[in-house]
Length: 221
Image (cartoon, rainbow, N blue to C red; front, side, top):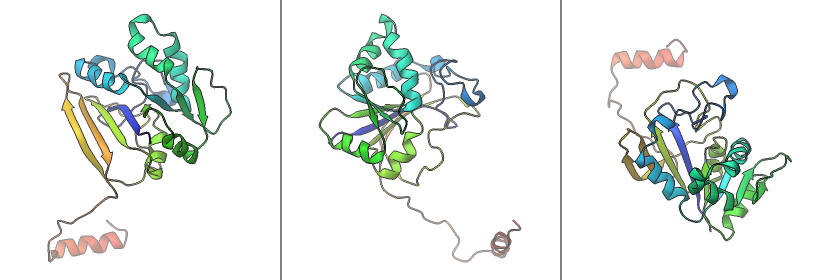
């Protein structure tokens, strides 16, 4: 069975929109496109190389597919280390639409059930780059095996978040981590079951705490 590995460039406040260039995804009035480039150092490059240095297929949302299909097949020879593996890889596009998928090796995947069939088939691991809409669905379906986050030291204030509406509660276990010279935190996580909770409450709450709880219950806090 294949693994599904998510990989994302993320700001400290959780934004993944438009990391590569100002024109990549300015939807919603996003004005900080290209925010990764100033921090892209040897450590980040090395981790990207690990993701795409061997056999892999791509798993993409439709909009990320459109961005990639308009860029990578036409990239210069200076970017051949990513261009050529992306071109050779099968591209699985999670979409309910019927728009053309012209990039060679592209395959339409209608829903999570269809993706589960792809995951159970023979072939290399499926690697996600970007594609924020996939993560709530993958986590809810139990299909995500690993999450590689490259968290850059920048706050963007607004933009598409990695974990948006519909993200289910879950616990993750850190598998490995490093901090690059430019201050990017690279951490890999694996799913580790439901959220566990505990309590630091005092055995006997103070009178002030009893009053606070009463105000909360009455909607006055």
